[in-house]
Image (tube, rainbow, N blue to C red; front, side):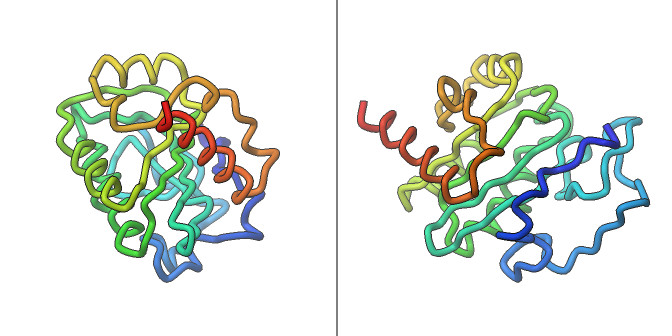
Length: 191
């Protein structure tokens, strides 16, 4: 797991540690010192810790004028033991929402497991962004993770599955990815 880095090819567009609206503003990173772990496995030092002990993130891009953020996740999303959704909403999403973000693209190909609990934070996040015509799209999550999310009845708070699990997002720039996701979301909402 220590070799698994967040996507870095968009650093020419955006760097969260240089964004005064980011919860990770002025954070300093080491390329050589591995300190964060998921269970007993060290992870790459470029991942950002936001309160959860098993789920880490990297804001790949935030566009405040258009109101969207692209966030890559890594680890185990565990609401049952660690209430990860509370940390994700309170310590990451709300900071961005307070600066105009209402559309979230969560990239989950490195989310290895999901363990659900109650849905109150999902409902709260959904209601908060719904007032601003926002949405939360899950991109490239593993099938078993999506299955577990559906079993926990939280899938109604997200746009997920289908073509969103087939997008080769690394071949796009952030604006192109947003346009692609926005088109998918609008098609689904029109149905």
